[in-house]
Amino acid sequence: MRRSIMFGALLLIVGFATASAEETKRLAFVERATTDAVTDTGVQGDSPGDLLTFANEIYDEKNETLAGTNNGWCIRTVVGKAWECFWTLTLKKGQIMVEGPFLDGQDSVLAVTGGTGAYSKAKGEMALHARNPQGTEYDFVYKLAN
Image (cartoon, rainbow, N blue to C red):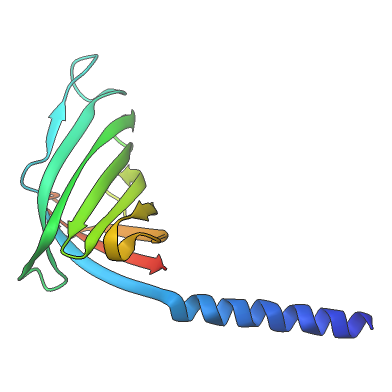
């Protein structure tokens, strides 16, 4: 009996993992960071509480065709190391919202917190990668489970 229960639980876990993998949707874009602006809010220079705001164009994965826009802000949490960010990606079929860390000089992973339209049930994560040291372009790769 115990073996049957364990085997049944294993099948359930494997079945769930397979179904989850099949339902994951990958979306990839390039952000052209042309409007990023830092507002110094406290101690002069890089300090906790500074704000980074942006409203940039988003292109397809090949960085050729305009796919949408993003709009958001980040607050400096650790000088020279991290910001905590919130933004909305707007595409033709709806919006996707993200929240999480933007790490200086490192790749970051942010949580997808929701969406609208075709993405109204979106959840998952977004990987962020700087395409150059100047920080003028970023890869955004969304892994969505709808």
